Length: 183
Image (cartoon, rainbow, N blue to C red; front, top):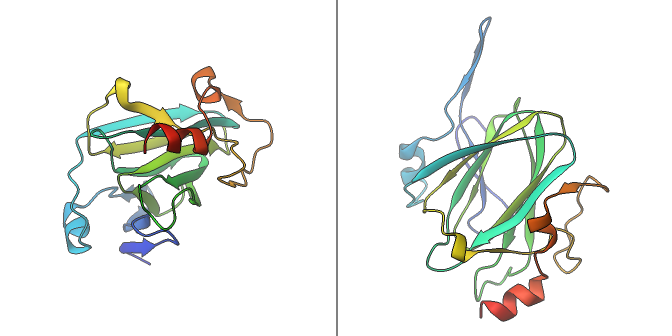
């Protein structure tokens, strides 16, 4: 696919393909095209842009901001490779607790669009993996929450058995605990 949204198995989560132009100087790729989002019926206005750099085995997540600060994200890997995860935490969703997993790389042509109501995380599969995030809401630390990356009830088959995880992320609770707190 050259340009457009490729839906995943969970409603709302999509790979976003944009054209890549390559020549002897390197490559050029547009990460976000508002017209493409509007033509796909995605009403989102990104407010923040961030990036992270991680070495192989660094796992970040699974993070979510709770109401009223939920956020949609557009996630791209600019360099290296990541295994990216979005977990459905939308109240009443038929796929609540299910995850979408994709590999994104600096050589790829896709980004992952994650709508509001999903926890997000990734593990770096290469040293110096650079991830670019766009978010449609402000950061609200009092509404920061998440689910532990290794919660078996979510069933993510992480491609790394010994990840490097921040203390904050190791303290995240189970899906059941998240559900109980945010009914």
